[in-house]
Image (cartoon, rainbow, N blue to C red; front, side, top):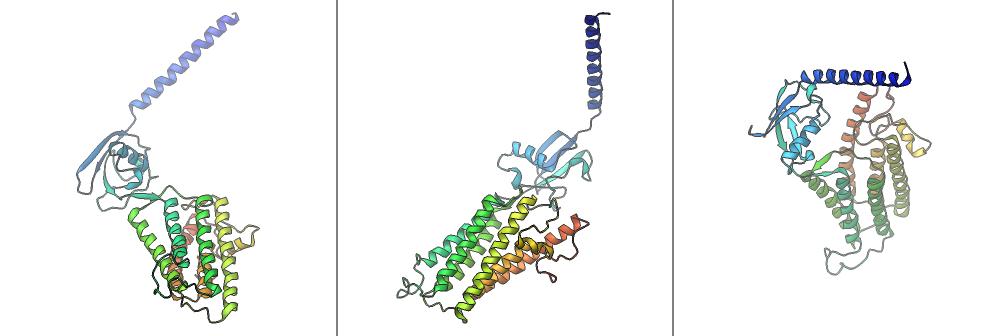
Length: 338
């Protein structure tokens, strides 16, 4: 048999194998089970019917199919559940893993306008930055007319403005260049409430610190500059922790690895707490409260500490649940205590 005959035989065998594999695939597709998904609104009125949905389709993909039918409801604005009053299904949940049959009824809830986390952080930080400057530069006519354009001679007033602006400018830079946010969003109403909180407190504390009749701290320069040192250390620590988390690949959802201290001394707080960035943040505002000796700043620090403690304890529980070998010495936010 010559080479030409061998080539013809090889091509014949290849064609037969390919035909056989194709036939087998068609036989498999014939018995393939698809899902039928009906989506209703909260009043159980039918919105759409999705036929031949893949069993491995995720909730996120089903939201995209609904978005093609109703463009006004983009995926981040949708919430799907298996019961009108049930919990919303997560985007990564797979259809065949849900406690349903091949015919599924889902209920749609409109979450309202949404914004991504980057825009949320930018909105929360830009406001306090400029609001404080408005009060410091006396661009708003809010004080008594005789004192309205009078600058306070206390050096702590200028120092407080520099520290306050530095803090929020750092947060803006971290939001743009360092933080890794998830694809999640936040409702516009929640964003407005958060902005009202941050912007309102910034205006309140700026009003008193920049008031022409503001009095300096009781212990003078010792109190001011001691608090300044702690403030700058906490700012450096916060930046170092966020940089370490960025290198670790944390994106605000489930962590990929356990965060450990690096050669940077500011990250050594990881030996004792799960969320040292919150520890440093509390330290920043506590030192700013001591520096300015201002009641609104102290109240803002207290409320911030309560909220960050809730967040830190939640993340600490997540770490201990995700990693069996998670260090037992660590607490949530305050070393060896909380």
